[in-house]
Amino acid sequence: MTVKPDPASPPEAPIKPICLALQGGGAHGAFEWGVLDALLEDPHLDIKGLSGASAGAMNAVVLASGLAKGGREGARQGLAAFWRNISGAGSPFGDLGFWSRSFAPVFGRDNPFVQAANAFADNLASGSPFGISPYQFNPFNFNPLREALQSAVDFAHLRKAPSVQVFVAATAVRSGRLKIFDTGVLTADHVLASACLPYLFQAVEIDGEAYWDGGFTANPPLWPLYYGDLPRDILVVNLNPFHRPTTPTDTGAIIDRLNEITFNATLAAEFRAVAFVNRLVEEEMLNAKGRAQYRSVRLHLIAAEGYLDRLALASKFNTDWGFLTELRDLGRTAAQSWRAAHFDAVGVRSSVDVRSDFL
Image (cartoon, rainbow, N blue to C red; front, side, top):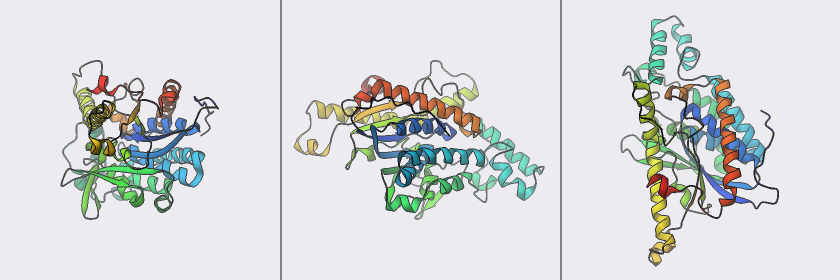
């Protein structure tokens, strides 16, 4: 991929450290790829920490692995190769994707089981599953994401020589609690656990615990970025629109909006918590212990509104290369617009009004 650089910050601008929090959203993660690609072009933004859930977790580890081995250009190339592999592996839905690759060679493309599996996938994408468990329709637990991840990320090198801190969210099935895996332990299993939608894939077992998609409990997780030697500026890349201008009335639109609300709920709650603590710090309402323990956080946001509004839930399973590169280009545009409008705020103040938008 060749994209002409378009840095938004002037050559004399200071280098500003920042953390990135990357939301999950299936194939819409290609929008996030575009955001990251544009941010990596700007040498004045120094990425120090990454957190993510689901597709955001995948983008985070691919970016971190690329940075560790090849710097900014290595990260850009790694992300492009990863999403090309995602497209090549095919979606878990549809006759030409995961189902034909996995089941058709075993049973034959014209086998009624294969045809039923494809019909199930199409209905699941539209929000109308037949009620069949992945332990039934996918007994061998095929997952096309594993190969794409393992070809894009050198996990052993990432664990030993990380260039940034990475935090990946997953949801413990039995307790319902959020689990954060950090750079020092990360494997493909941890990232697949973060992206394990329970109606598509069997739970991922790690150290005796079963895990589902991290987006159910943190999408993306912000609090791991509050601590340690990390910048106070956190840029959140949001894939699920917060606002809709109308009330959905048909089944598909209702399912879409429920999905957006569900996967934004934890993020909105973290935004509210940040606003509360920031107020305590700014108005000096904490005692000496509190002042030593807490610090204000500067929040920034690249949101899906205006870019992904027209896309339905089923498009999160569309891995057509033309669609993915369209999302990438939208993400690049969104990042360039954010840099032009808010680069000066980094290191100084929040560029998103949390109190107004989320309280």
